[in-house]
Length: 234
Image 1 (cartoon, one colour):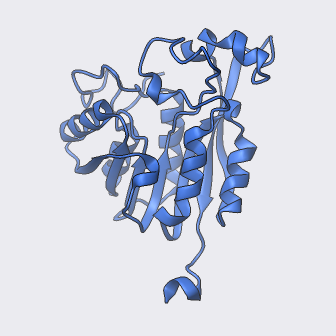
Image 2 (cartoon, rainbow, N blue to C red):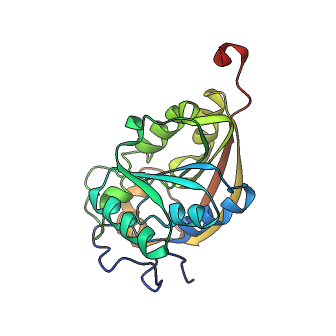
C-alpha cells in the first residue's frame, strides 16, 4: 500500500524522519474516516500527530489545524512536512492532558496503543514512544477519552484509531461514560507488524493474542458531543 502525504515516497516527506512514527495502515484508515466530516473552515486538533500525515490531510481539505505531540522529533517533522505540503498547521509540543485550547469541531488521534508487558519496551527497533502504551495498551487511550469532552465544541466530532488488542469496547464505554455518543465507523484486518511479532510470546501469555493469530483488527471510533446544555451556555 502506498501511504499518502508523509510517507517516505511522498514529495511532502521530511528528509529526516528518524525517531518519528511513519504512516501505516492505521494512519490511512484514520485519514479515510475524515471523509465523513465537513472540514471546510473547521477547527481541527490532531493529537499524537506523529509525522503529521492526518493533520496535513485535514489542512488540505480546508480545516484550521492544530497538531500536538509529546515527542520533539514529531513536532519538528510535522512542521517541516506541513511547510513542504504548502499548508498552515500550528504545531505544539504537549502531552494530551495538557492541551489548553478548547472548542474544536474535530479532534483526531492515532495514539500509542500496543500492549507493553514488562520486558517488551525495547523489543522492536524504532520510535517506541509512538506505540508502547503500558501493560494493557490503554495508557494514552484512557487519557484521550477523559479529555475529549473538554476539547470538543458543541456538536464536535472525534475520530480515534486503535487496535483490538487495546480493548475497543473499553474505549467506546469510556467515551459514552464521558457523555459522548460513540461507535466504531471503520475497521480493517491487517497482518501483524514487527512490533507485535517481536512481543508475540508475551502477548499470547497475557491473553491479548490467540497462539495461532497472525492478524489484528484496527478500528476507527467516532465520538460526538451533543449541543451545549443550558448550564454550559451560561
